Length: 243
Image 1 (cartoon, rainbow, N blue to C red):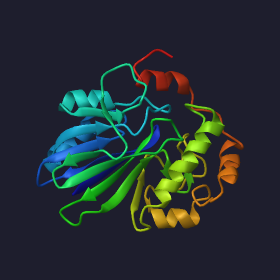
Image 2: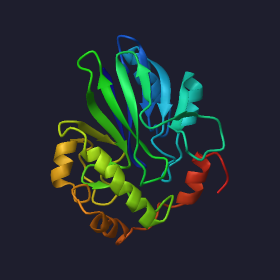
Image 3: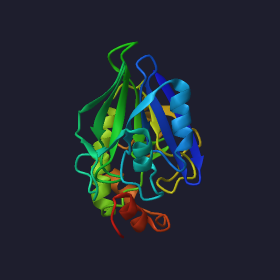
Image 4: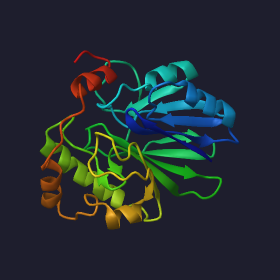
């Protein structure tokens, strides 16, 4: 299995190219900005991009997902209940996207946004169980994503708590590769380290480690920072409609 992480600073975000080198099948997750680096990285790895996946309809930047999908001939993927005014490949909770010896299982993890998904990645050339999870803006290193950009803060926090329980049930050794790191406007108290494990975050992530629903919701709705500039308009643009 091949994994490439792309770290961006304007906006602060993380994107990924992953897939099976031996079967020349890849996917790009949460692409930001210029699409050339993803096309070049896939070509260098000998992979054809089959899927371009956005973990959610972003509010902090204009996604380049649809542009990359069109340029590469890939399917553009969102959660099946995402509210978007264009055609996309909708995926359901538990659905598996096949990339040769690499498999991506979809986990619906709402809270940051209602349509948010995380991606469990298995390298079947090694073992038939997940190796890592790409968590977008749900679970990040040091904290969890803000909850008021696409719903009320309380409703988002309630959903995020349930998503956290699903993620906590994953094996402690599972690698966590988030969609953002320190400096992102989509989380608070994030680490500058752009990867972790489920077990480390269960012990040291100040939001993820909270076991009580009421305590978690109270924390997530307190001292909410200002939204990203133009957040509603950006999210609308990413959904293919006017603000």
